[in-house]
Length: 392
Image 1 (spheres, rainbow, N blue to C red):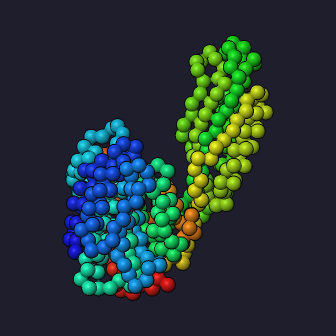
Image 2: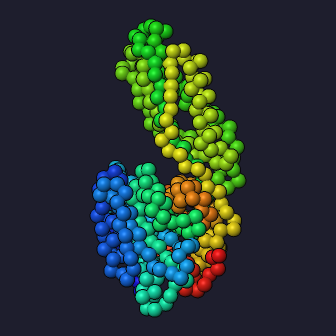
Image 3: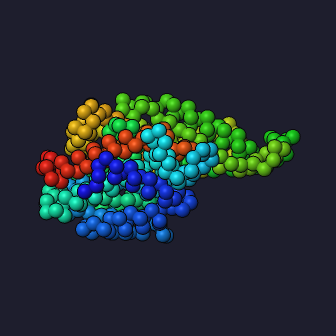
């Protein structure tokens, strides 16, 4: 059995030292490390290629009941290193009680906690204890991009509508269960070139894009708020177009990220974008525009009757001795994909660290957070596998 006071901390350091940036080195090396570690246990382990050289991993402790199974799902990739670091992003240095490195909180520390918990339960099962429910560990690829890893997990049947699914994203000591929807648009605006001294002879594609941006921003701001998820938002993350300051631009392209709360959804967003294009065509004569939806994820609302929330809350409060709040996750996770595509009401996030430190230079996670989550995840697994926690 893993040493619950230090196992996940040293494992976090080992995982940080493996570059799994996306784009960059990707998950091949870290996947091999995890596969080899799991293969040393007396459980079946599967590698499934999702993208060239990039594979999901699944290990399973067989229980008397296979569905619902308890599932810990963790992504193995991180964002790129970026600029501004004062520490080695792959050094896994411990200073003032914190581990530093790319992926420290998002989510190699959570991955380490899940692995440690799974290994502990595998050890108990190997000693002769028969689990009531199956316990599955899944490592996914591509979470930091298009989440094709979690989509493949669904396609392969590694999770079901009934599974009890937990990811270990950084939640700052909270249980987080609901997500805003995420709709991405790529909008192309076409116009006609002309000399800047006679702009009326052309049609300014960038001016048309500006009208679309203004309209969309205003309409998203008018969408109703949600008591748990807050307000819908829109970000115009990238825009390109034009040639020179003295040429009326005949082309502009922009990429839009909408985070939507009920009742607003992708259908709502399409209506807003369509109206924005029509409005822009009236205000900037001669332009035309079209859109492509490049991402479509539904919002996920909290289910107060979730069995997994109850089980995790019980385990976390037993370990910490304090009330544990249930809140919303501000981003979109592998469990959100599973919840949205399968209608699964037992998909939650709980992991070490603070999301505010993710994706930034000198990313770090407190060692005490790692120890807490390792203990909580192990307590949760034991209660469902060996202590007959009611999940039916």
